[in-house]
Image (cartoon, rainbow, N blue to C red):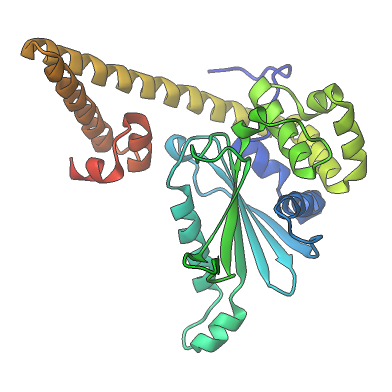
Length: 319
């Protein structure tokens, strides 16, 4: 168990920290508005006009295998918009399917029995999902910002519906691009990701970069985020919860590595017995399948087993 050492910086992407920063509209309304604005404007949208009316953290994933943080940001515009921002620090390549599932629940909850379809469409909110990822979800495109939407794919290509879409933020791609502190999006996510990756506080990151010191004075929402982080990082209860989260991450990493090695070793043994290279490969694969079965029987989520073993979800379900 890691003891609380106040010299240890809390990652702003840790779910206990992010949830506390965006605890409600009073402490994070400006920050939520700024975060949404810089993302939309980076994609070429016009200056974003909207009023944040609620900020609500949703912490339904609290077990060690499925930790993440989701914040619902409701914005009052002529489009009746709801922003769902999710922070995901574990690779999860089914996240966009979950985005669609979450959006479907929003649509259902905002309709009532007996509502005519025309009225339901008129009242349907626009759900914009923002996924803040510490991994690259696309290998075939290196841009930090990855928009997605439902399109007509024959020319002229255009949106098929306007009520659902979103943005994936591939944080590791920041390290591959030229620094651009004239961009609000770059300032926001450079600060967050550097603090996360280098175990620094937000104030330590800002102190390193004169351009960030200027930006924090220009953007009141970003300033609110930075100030709220400092308050949260000094809160004893949040720090205790953070270190529990950190211990769970260590435990999970150790379990995954042990499972990998078990699969490799069982595969090597079977391969040696068969005495040929093809047998070695087949044995390794059988060992991995055996580990996947054990993890499945232990109750681990199939998506996490897939991430661990590089097996597909269907392969695991068929074991």
